[in-house]
Length: 128
Image 1 (cartoon, rainbow, N blue to C red):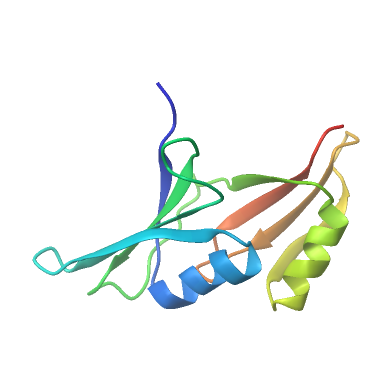
Image 2 (image 1 turned 90 degrees about the vertical axis):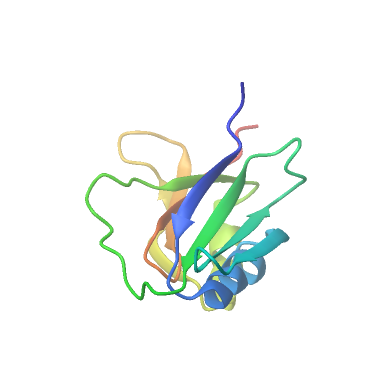
């Protein structure tokens, strides 16, 4: 068994695709409209789905907002250098919600960013 993808519901598919491709440097792997169901799925990631876990963005055509709830945590991405990653995200007008620095009660360097729909994404420094 392996994890295939994490699904996020988004309100503006093109804005979300732009965030994940331009700001987080993922690739759009595939996208398909389902007219009878009135939704579109887009899969993004850092490598082929056959070998990598990816993110599925679901855009329900008739839904313009979602209640985030209080159970969602975050998506975590490993990066080589959290400080450089946050600088690059900031240059692409990405929203940094926690600046790069050591985690609470630890030494691992982390930061948090937010996607256009408010989903939290944690950046974790690669352990050497």
